[in-house]
Length: 70
Image (cartoon, rainbow, N blue to C red; front, side, top):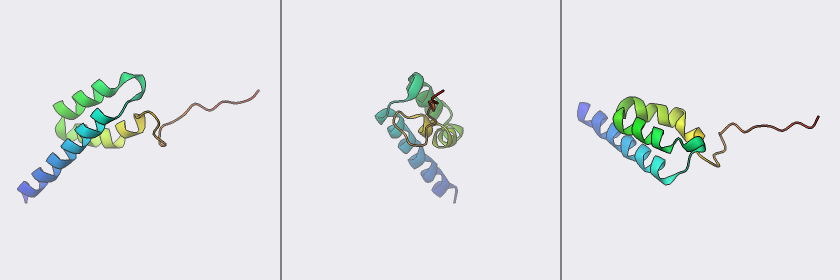
């Protein structure tokens, strides 16, 4: 059972690393996410998939500044 969990975590870790390396992030956060995923594998993966993926340039879940006409 623990081997299966380890394999799943490893696959998610590789997936997060590849995703970070292949995409650009707002405010130069690429290095920060790369270090987070590498140095904190378990927590880093969860944080990246919850927060980091929305910080990618051109991502639809990213919060954009709305412009109002006054």
